[in-house]
Amino acid sequence: MAKKLNLTTTMNIPQFINVLCYAESGVGKTYMCKTAPKPLIISAEGGLLSLADEDLPVFDINNRNDLNDAYDWLSMSKEAKDSYETICIDSLSEIAEVLLAEELPNHKDPRKAYGIMAELMAITIRGYRDLPFHTYFTAKVKKIVDEATGATSFMPSVPGQMLLNNLPYFFDFVLRMDIGKLPDKTKYRYLDTIGDRRYIAKDRSGKLAEKENPDLGYIIKKITRVGEPMVKPKGETKTKDVKPKVTT
Image 1 (cartoon, rainbow, N blue to C red):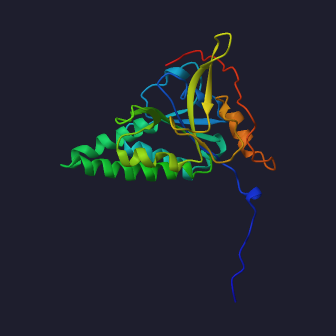
Image 2 (cartoon, rainbow, N blue to C red):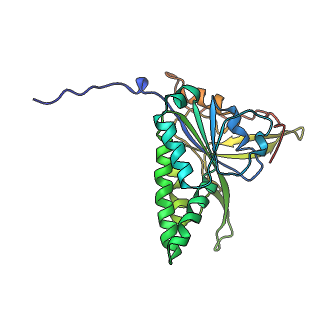
Image 3 (cartoon, helix red, strand yellow):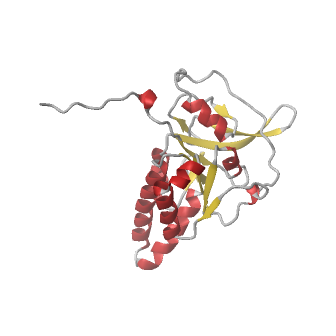
């Protein structure tokens, strides 16, 4: 006799979103951590100047053991689940560099070190991404110039071609942060949610506008609202950003 399956519906599955945001240094991707609901920051950046005036909990990553300790605590601790809703990993670029620096002295062929680093990063990203929290990952930006055509494109920056090519596939949302200008010359931050030939971006929910305000709390609510149509609004949303007290 066939075993009866315990079926549920997608509306009853807890919705945790995972976001990768990449941008030039100083644009504001780290500062956006403060807009997340109950954030805990896992930082390999060696200083969070843009959040200097904020009272946010931070766990510093200096080596692979630190990364594993933070994951173990988040996955097993009731205190963590009661205290935080969003885990902010700042940044994948720096964490990959930390892991690579640990591996390079162990191998005569640096390609071996890059391969191991890419495998460790894949395990790390999947592990943190699948925790019962919203997860927000940041990365620096890599500029790529096509030698044949001279065309310029941009994508999240990490060491190693293997990891670089695979990185966007780990996430449901890949957002590029940039700075625009309103007609009165006022600058504002925004998030691109749809990619083109110049840069990578994606919105797997279909609920985000082509340009969104850099507010994680707002974005999480917009994505996780149950019963709303998964249709992108027409046009672009340009909302003036709140100027941070301290910039990097």
